[in-house]
Length: 225
Image (cartoon, rainbow, N blue to C red):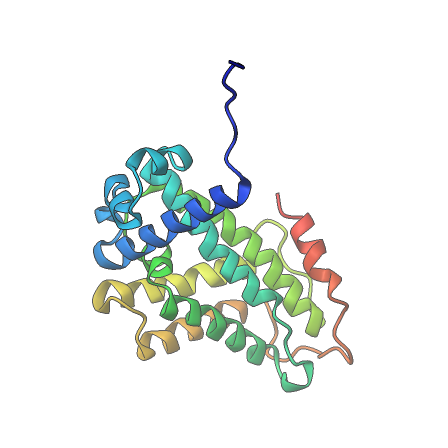
């Protein structure tokens, strides 16, 4: 008989298994929060052996980091959705639009609220979140620059990333108290976002006659470490 050969599972099969694990983990996060997430619990929900979960995610933090990556991919997507240039009168209009899009993710995705806004004590996830925020900050900077002529901004900090993180702290307070971001706290977080940007952007910016080309997104991503 020919020697046995280890055949790697088809990529599509692996991706389907990973998707099942992600979906089960999201359901468990919604029910139990980060502290209640376990590999065995995810395996039971996904109706697969725990060893299959461990094959792709050797630990709970590894699984959480993967889910956080999904959440931030959704945030990145909101910054690539075209904005109707004619609808923008001021940069504050763009700021509010960006926050509304991100708040929709928090409203629709319990995993996003648990991973980004809830207090979970997972240092690896928090560190990954900070790195993702830097990427989002660069994309947001590029988005604003596409529609408005921005003034020189500090080089030793990312103004847009900090504005986003400050707004998230407000939304986190709402999640701690209410389990979700309620309208009153959505309004307050958006005010914080605009107010912090207002420390570096003048009240009125010159709106570009035409928005810059879409290549700005690729350039921003290439400059992300």
